Structure formats: C-alpha cells, structure tokens
Image (cartoon, rainbow, N blue to C red; front, side, top):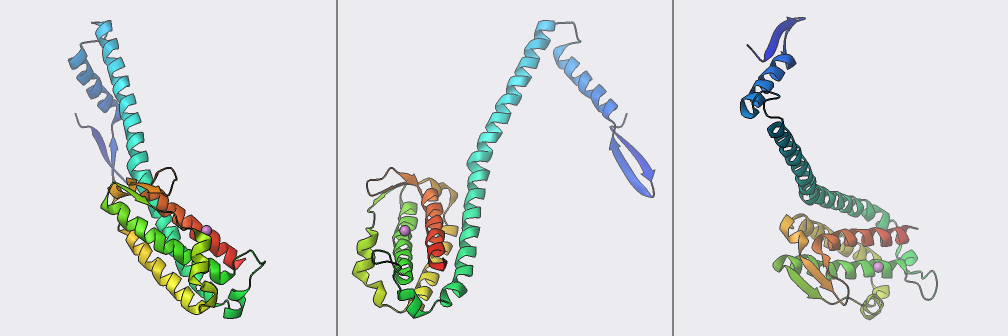
Length: 221
Ligand code: NI
C-alpha cells in the first residue's frame, strides 16, 4: 500500500502523504517492538517513559547547542554588521565638522571633539592589541589605559582634525577586518584587563563597538 496519494489537480501532480496509512505502519512497527496493546502494560509504560525522557533530553540539548553555537555566532555577526555601518556612516558626518569646531571645549574639564576622537584612536590601538593577543593564547593579561593621561600626553588638540578622522577610519577598517577573521573558538579566550574581572574576547569586541557608538554620539550631539 503506498504512503502517498498521487492525484492530478488543475494539471499539477498533487502528492499528499496518506496520514492514515502512515499511522497504521507506525502502529504496526510499535507493536512489533513492544507487543500488542494490553499484552504487557508495564513494558508499554516503560517504553513511553523512555521515549518521553529521550525527547526531553534532545530538546534540552538542542536548545543548549543553539544558544552556544548559533546564537553566539548570530550575536557576533550582528555586532560586526553594526560596526561596519557605524564606520561607513560616520566618515561624511565627521568630515563635515570644521577644524575650528573640533577644537572647542564645551567646558574646561570636558574634552573637545578632537580629543574625543583621539580617545577613540587610543581605544582602537589598545583593542587592536587585545583582539590579536587573545587569539594567540587562551588567556591574556593586559594593562588598562589611563584615558585622560593618554589624551593629554599625545596632545591631540594640536593635531589636524581631518588627519585624525582619516586615521580613525582606516584604523577601524583594519580592526573590523581583524574582528571578522577571529575563529569561533578564540572568541571564548579569557582576557584580564587591569584589575578587572576576566571577560571573553567576544565581550571585548562587542564592548569596543558600544564604546565607539557612545563617543560618536557625543561628537555628533
Ligand atoms: Ni570612553
């Protein structure tokens, strides 16, 4: 007896699985393994429990795998897609800012736009080290960078805004290229930054992109 119903409908061949036939086959298979119903109720019950437990284990395992493999990968792809867009969209907006405007300090203790961009270049150079070193070992320890001292020491205020914009963009295009090439297993490398609790390389990449967006918003506000 065939499993499917083949009929011609409106000139097309319609193939429909015959559920009744499938069910009869399935029942016959179950009875051949377990014996007819009522033959051994305890055996039947034990099989049903075993099947339910197996299904439960498979469901839990597939959810765990999806979380570990697919969602982790999807999260990273989201982050990198976001990063690419942020860098591409920022360039024309940054170049519209004049050198004079980039020099202005909103208040004596606040950074100018030029210094904020300088801080983002420092962040790129420090994270460059982290992104590469964390792939060379399953555990790394690197110092934090003192952001105020770094900005002051390098004298960003005396640099050309246009040069800083191009340096920031090209550095980030390279970092994006580096981040895209990180193998999945390296994303879990443990990174000790300064005295902070260890974080994964995946966290560092995500946090880096979040930090870039935060300071670009400051520049464009
Ligand atoms: Ni910052």
